[in-house]
Image (tube, rainbow, N blue to C red; front, side):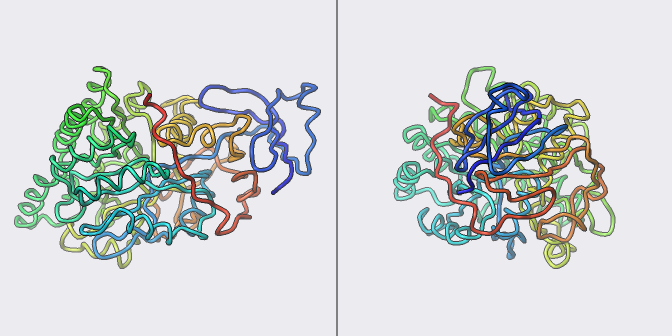
Length: 467
């Protein structure tokens, strides 16, 4: 292993504490913390010393929603596990949880094995898997039990995309009933896909083909309706529920109501919904296609309600739903028909910085930044305190963060394998300087020093918010 490292003089920020402390790392784990300048800290000895004076020392980010190499709409997400995890590291994220896909007619095991094959030996940082369940039947339900036992403890279902990933209410209920028994967590893409398909067909028939119509047909009310229905089905099944990529204020209201009733219902949003809007979808010359994702970007007034939800804990997690498609040759598949634009945005490299900007802008506190980006996703998906915090025994996934550095986001300087940035030209305060993954420097003072294959597969326990 890497021997001992000591990080001196930084402000250590976790979800619960801020303390000027030195951090001792040994054999890939946090060995000890001691207040800077105290005899205990002075006694730390190590082969490598990192000076973090004037910097933050934070846990590596946990991005619980990525799609590397995802097949979608006749093409593939443009980031491989190698390029995507390297970009994640550049952005201060040290763990991703990606989605293995079950194809209709195939077993969960086949899908999971295929994703293991894509990722193994290629990742710069640690990774786990959720399982997309596209075909609920008796065999699938039995397989869910086996997957939970081996550390794949969450299952994603879709109320959207009929003919691809879609599950009907009966299939959803059966999967929820199973997860109520085996301890798994159902993750839901909550949009009424059957109704949306009608609106898509009608819009195209009227000649409304531009990217902005993608946002208009995928109505906020249909996100709210599906969110409500998912909550009620989970309540009937006695199961917990995690709603992914919440974008509409009406959906936040449904989550808030359920949580007020004491239900184990959780919600995630993404940076694109916090920082972008339908104004981007309406950009001319097909530029709007760069911002096509589902759930779609909403009018700007939704942003305030999402920030409020993050402050009140009606939304608990910010993940990226990183699913990049190049503008040239991929997004362009939908010229003349918005329904053929591959759905997804690049973002795995930008999340930690965008959320730090939210601290600067006064939307959230520093500790809440770490909570929604590191600690809660780790707890939600059974990886805490190994991941998501800085405490003795935790993996030494640590970021030295310069809160004063300024940067301009651009496709020219990012490391994601995609030909545009969703945040092109945006000025941000704060930047990752050095990143350790299990004690190994993968970014060293703004240079990539990691390698494919350092990242290891991380089996997960069940959701740590449930008894």
